[in-house]
Amino acid sequence: MSAPSTAYPIGTPGVAWGPAEVAVWRARQTRHRSYADDVLTVIERLRDRFDVREYGALDYAPERYALFALRSRHWRDELPTVLVTGGVHGYETSGVHGALQFLERDAARYADRANLLVAPCVSPWAYERIHRWNPDAIDPNRSFRADSPAGEAAALWHLLAPYRDTALLHIDLHETTDSDESEFRPALAARDGVASEPGEIPDGFYLVDDSEHPQPAFQQAIIDAVAKVTHIAPADARGEIIGSPVVAPGVIQYPLKKLGLCAGITNARYKSTTEVYPDSPRATPAQCNDAQAAAVCAAIEFALAHTTQA
Image (cartoon, rainbow, N blue to C red; front, side):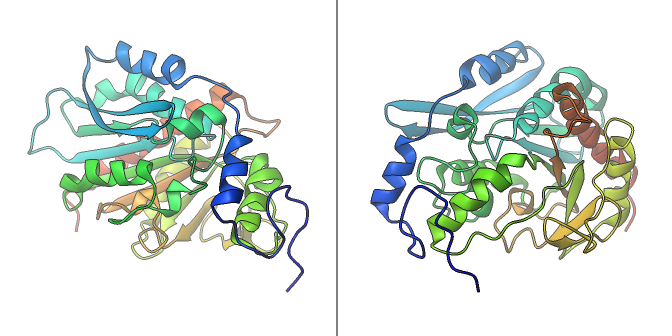
């Protein structure tokens, strides 16, 4: 094992952070954009088309963030339920704006075919600071469990509890960025008092399937749709993407529930986590949003087409 990295400016190499180090880290975080301006204004525009529900609030003094989900106005219990989440990692911009774009441009086509429940910005504090963690230096996307230490994860866990055994589909919208390698992985290693091991950021879109209940045809349908919008990430020289074996072009697998990942909250048959690469010279912000929306639409179309199959 290599020696713990000395590059990260907070903490003592080889020693996990305590409250003092977390406080120093939190004090370094700067607000770069507005949840109210970027997200809540769009939600307000959608109130005439969806039922908007405040499903919790995050009190991070002196700030308070109300959490919102939008659901089909004419909910029908006999229709399948589709769950879409974005902004679990607040810095992953197209996850938030792709979810909102889907609501604005695409959701109407499913009005008589599915019940939609969309939480477009799960982590607003992190959205404003373009960060992965919440103010307690906790990654919400490793915290989706009943006793979650992350308020963002706990609120969404309770929101989705009624659909745990009835949802047909849950798609969670993410990005993999260059800052994963330059900031977030070194910060994680420093926080946990371990060595920071260099990795490789994939250039392109990819998906994370559930290794415990894989759905390869479903993932392929999403990849095929997104390939019309932006490029799919190739495997690296080891046949991997971010350290996991590629099981099909642009697809890797994680045990979603075991890792406490958002897409594993429910027992939905169809689950996927999208990963867009916004730092590619081959992709624009608009393409990234389009890719997320295309992934959601393809996922819904496939799931609805296969609801009667065993």
